[in-house]
Image (cartoon, rainbow over all chains, first blue to last red; front, side, top):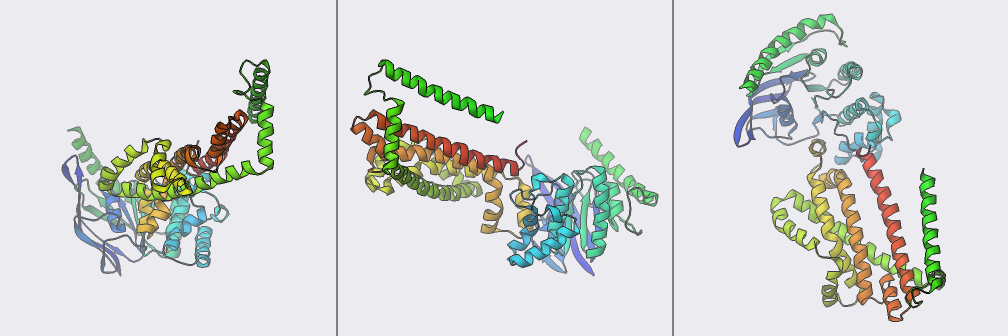
Length: 258
Length: 253
């Protein structure tokens, strides 16, 4: 079943008085339970696309359909995990996880029950009463994922959530995220500039072109899980995507030289 | 190191009192212009025992707290509107910048004309002194909120007033606390000034009474009390609050 549909999404930006086309007609179908990774050169508009799905930005034309219905505002059915966590430093870990539930007016007892479950899933139980400044970057991203899952969204949106992590922490979270995906059967859209990440995580990888951006190619990765970073069989997917991206990056740097 | 600092300060103040006593005993300055530390101490003790000192402190603090609460609530509302609506900032915001430059004591004549020598008059002076500094700091606090906090809040379903109270105000707290601190400083000056000029209660009134009776011990003693309260509120309430907030917000190394 098609969970989310992006239809011809176009987005312009104003840069010093010039209109720049960031997205030039993105079309994408995401099926229920998909793990879709979006890779592309930096500045290609992949985060903008994610923000449009989240309803945090509006497209200049085109529409996003969720379960067949058009959406234009933020909603708890599409929860984002941001690059820098965006955890609230004034709240304890557990209150961060409960934030969205509180906004939705869910009673405290019920909130506690839900947040405990996801803290447990992310192995954060003993940090429930900590503040975010007491956590490492990796722990913060665990909290951010728990906070997103606690909302039980239809789609989990992830905007380079592991970009700031050291490689060991990242490898660990890459495995964990796959297990969580299998366990919760969530539909996930994951934006990254890291090809390995996309190959390890995605069952579909969408390659974005340079600005003005469209989807250049979709790579289907049908391979057993949990996939590990060092798995040699993933290399061919890695190279396939790399080849596609290389020409984009080269074209980009030529542009920059002008 | 910490204890060392404490001893240094104790030593300094003990030394200061000794010097003061020595100057008093040399009669270089006539005794109607300079009381001895003992005289001041005795007077404060007497006023503490008969309750008049505590009553004066209570009165001043009560006015201060009421005025400051009004100024904080009003300042937050004004500051948020200034941050959210450009037209408000360009118009009312510019006026506020001007009003903020008026010293607290300059509001006293207006307070008297509007409210007479009443509590309301004193509270007006406090609010007028503190409100604008608080709204200016609120404005810059809201403007400087990291955009991801707002995005995350909206993403999780917060909007309108919910977003303001649950995300924007706490996110801006490191700035707000600076505004509250400035607001308190102006409010404190305002309450003492207005009490000196027109009140029949409070620390400023006791100061005025001392002048009226040519009682130098009274004037000196109340000045010391005003200073001590200032040190306590600044050093304990605000410094502690600020340190805690900055640490929790990850702004302290």
